[in-house]
Length: 331
Ligand SMILES: Nc1nc2c(c(=O)[nH]1)N[C@H]1C(S)=C(S)[C@@H](COP(=O)(O)O)O[C@H]1N2
Ligand SMILES: [Mo]
Image 1 (tube, protein in one colour):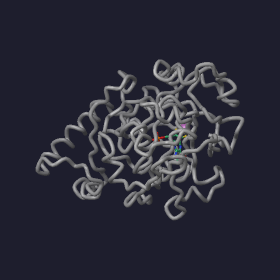
Image 2 (cartoon, protein in one colour):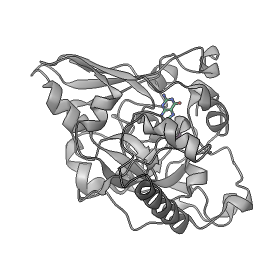
Image 3 (tube, helix red, strand yellow):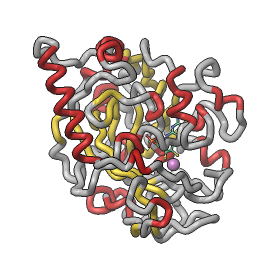
Image 4 (cartoon, protein in one colour):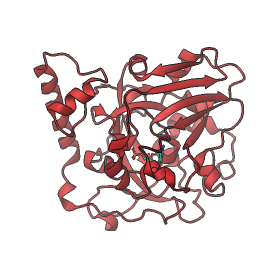
């Protein structure tokens, strides 16, 4: 982001331009049959992840979610190919090239995993991953993802509203913001040797943004647990904000009364504001945000760019959170 121009022009090999939705649905159907074959038992527990890897080398455990009925939680747009969503990534802990995370993130150890929820809450607590997986029913939500660099995808996530976790820990009246701290393991993450960002990668939301039902705590995508490069075992997805607000591989969630300092804001405060809501009318200092390139679309870099939508198309659902605010100032 800071070190490169917008959309650094990754060209997808034609071979991976396979039909997206049908490939995805085919995969789900196959997983379903696989689950029945295993005695009809749902492949839920995280331990199944390793068992699955033995059955399908290189593949991940199924993680099903009921289609979400929440307004805004689905889109009629074509779902991006899994092959794109899992190989064209930003996860600077593993390097700054789009292909680095998929190539290197296997080293991330996601089991055991805990997330400590602390700060201005009545019930601070360290959650094991298994507990988090059971905290609320899993839903599938199909969200647009718009990176600040000017590209986008449509991804079917599996998870539940972060609000469920927030309710469980009971924020104090003094809590106004939520800080999200992500994993920083120098053994597993070669990118930490670079000073491109201050580690650990920290993000933040206002409490009302964090409790908005569209803010998703995600454990899976495309009907499977998250691949490491997409932020396993648990990440945030905030669909109306630029992608970098959605921290991957979360280890700590802290409630505060002050606006958290965030990794990209510290690195370049004039370029990455705290809010970072998708907004076609507010340009990045070095490029326009009026349009975007949908990854995987016919024509690659020559494909016609799409118009970027206010709040990434989620304005009817989240616009009221920013009523009366100057979105140029609070960018
Ligand atoms: N910990 C961490 N989280 C991160 C990032 C990162 O570098 N480190 N990159 C962000 C950016 S810039 C984007 S666009 C999204 C990309 O998510 P995806 O690879 O699952 O599409 O993750 C975000 N979360
Ligand atoms: Mo991004």
